[in-house]
Amino acid sequence: MTDIHEASHDGARELQAMIAQAGVVVAFTGAGISTESGVPDFRTPGSPWLKNKPIDYEDFIRSDEARREAWRRKFTMDDLYRGAQPSVGHRALATLVARGTSPGIITQNIDGLHQAAGIPDEAVVELHGNGTYATCLACGLRHELVDIRRGFEATERAPECVACGGMVKSATISFGQAMPAEAMRRARDLTLACDLFVAIGSSLVVYPAAGFPLLAKQRGARLAIVNREPTELDEIADLVVRGEIGDVLGPLAATH
Image (cartoon, rainbow, N blue to C red; front, side):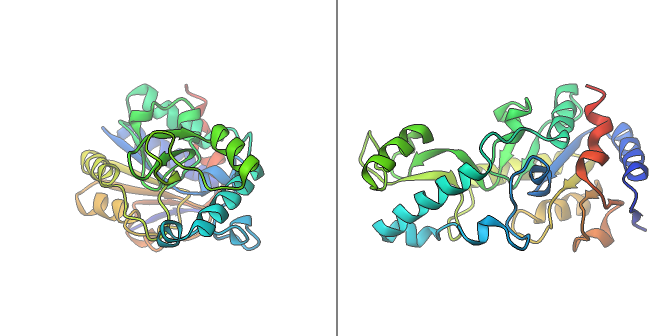
């Protein structure tokens, strides 16, 4: 039977106990862990993402105007959460990685805040890419946003790769774009290796990413869910904590 805690402090104690009993802990994070850093999510009514929806991948490829609009929206959203710092939740997960309790974090987020909290790049699996830099779709060369923005604002032209002239796109996975095979493989490997899987701040409705907590449970791991709202996987979880992520994970950060 699922153990559901509406009180954050009770849930925090139970989660700490589960982590202490576990051999390998893997966390899976969604937008909720970053909203506490001031980064807007996609689904809250009035979210700025609703006015600046990401351009579909096929439209980006097909249309120069769509590419220009994608970059306009990108920079508008970047300005809204410029200077965002890792939350208590990010720091708590960095503590788990630093202690060796967790080999890595799987995230749906694109903000780079896990790395900013001190988790090494190689220990963060970004299922939806990273919005803090860009890449050439032809040759894969990394491009820094400060350079792209300078050129875009000067010319109002969509950026092209300095190496091959290919299309340059934010290093995120757009709607309609194939999921990154390597990130999916790494996420599966982490999921299969853990005996405690903790889903944090995710509505668990976006697939295939949301399939990982289900896979963990099916393979015998315990499943804990920390989220302000109910999720579709609550009924199969071993622990559900409905509360603020910082309140629930805060004790972990304090032990670093």
